[in-house]
Length: 260
Ligand SMILES: NC(=O)c1ccc[n+]([C@@H]2O[C@H](COP(=O)([O-])OP(=O)(O)OC[C@H]3O[C@@H](n4cnc5c(N)ncnc54)[C@H](OP(=O)(O)O)[C@@H]3O)[C@@H](O)[C@H]2O)c1
Image 1 (tube, rainbow, N blue to C red):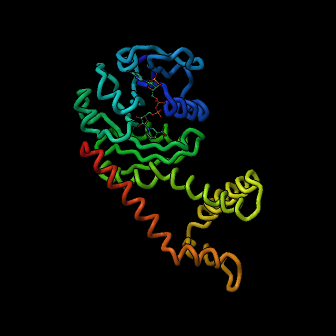
Image 2: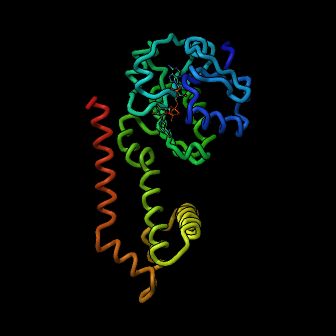
Image 3: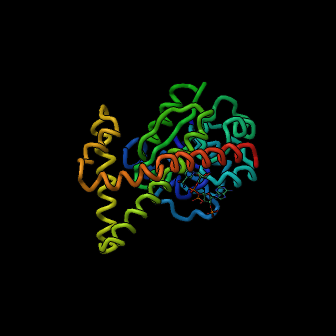
């Protein structure tokens, strides 16, 4: 029986976000979590030590939440039952090999909105004990939504949810600028844009059987205003531009995996 249920190597932004979600959900309490980080002084009542070996050998589940280049440069022994890596671009085989933990490594690709409890995570847990996979799912559901997706699809996941927040920020920024260009105060334009984008996404979720094309045409009455804007998107092949951008992202993810 290990002293802690969950340990973290690296107590940075993502570890803090995940721990925040776990505590808020009531899944674990502070006494069940341990972290290791060289600069850690205060982890809000959670054990934080500058000792990776201690944490890696005293917890049931170990989350690798350091930067990928840090993980490649450090050495520690690990006797956890299961290792959960959130590191971008390092595959399960590399981690299993480095830690000598065959068939015990889960890889997760979270995204930055996890920091506000609205993340979208992909979990690769093929071949693992269901109990471990389900515990990992519960962790990432405490900071948003999470889905089991085979590791071979992670380049595609990168170009959708991994990098996706930046695409959404880009679109939102352009809309805010458009509001300002048409005479709105910047703060008002920002508030209206944010509420509109969140509201539109909620509409998509609330109408799962309605094709998105239908939702678009529902607000595009003939001779009206919205159709004029949508026509500009269509005439400029905006969907093609978005797909091209995502293809470039996926290609770079493949290159990074190949060490380029
Ligand atoms: N941020 C995201 O939204 C996001 C999304 C997907 C995946 N990820 C992955 O999540 C991981 C963590 O990202 P992050 O944004 O949380 O990074 P971060 O804020 O830099 O956190 C990493 C922490 O590890 C500490 N650290 C450095 N060397 C260490 C060592 N030898 N032993 C233990 N801890 C050490 C760092 O301390 P110092 O700051 O003092 O160096 C820092 O506190 C990365 O692998 C990243 O690829 C992040």
